[in-house]
Image (cartoon, rainbow, N blue to C red):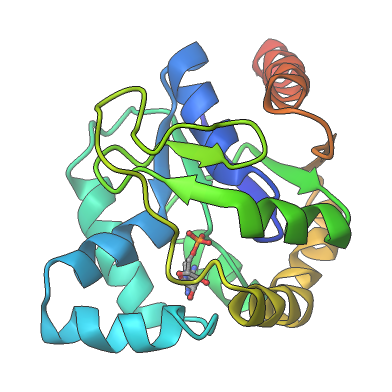
Length: 211
Ligand code: AMP
């Protein structure tokens, strides 16, 4: 099965992706993570990507697709995939149709105030990608691998505001796009991660039963 996790920045896509991986073995294809890996490599391309992501701007689609395609090619052909952070525009959605047949789009619906609160409390593990929030996690190190947690460079107020504007202009139209395609499944993602996971599992069970 191939699904898309769609939602505003900080709607909980990364956390749901980690939880669906644990529950059902789905493999997350996070374009944000792939871009951060390229930045960490210190390459010229990474420096260029960093100048865009730290300002909350979108990276060129061509670059994102190349990194994503290389990653997908490294996975087993029959793997269950979750696209996280891709597509971010209708243009990217049309390109994805040449790469994978999508079974469902899980739209994580959260209001803007919650998104801002989550963004400004988010801390992540640079080694394993685990996401925590200052609101409920009080340690400085990752509970999985002991690495020192960091604040993402794009989790500052100005960048988050920019990312929300970009989301409204470029990504929001995908809700209509995937509703028309009969693929959109709405999840109320304003509660906790467990609640979001339970809704997602229910939806995926229904889809599997229909196939
Ligand atoms: P994320 O981890 O999904 O929040 O992505 C972090 C940043 O990476 C975004 O704010 C964009 O700058 C960039 N990015 C991630 N996915 C894409 C994409 N599909 N197209 C363009 N830029 C992207």
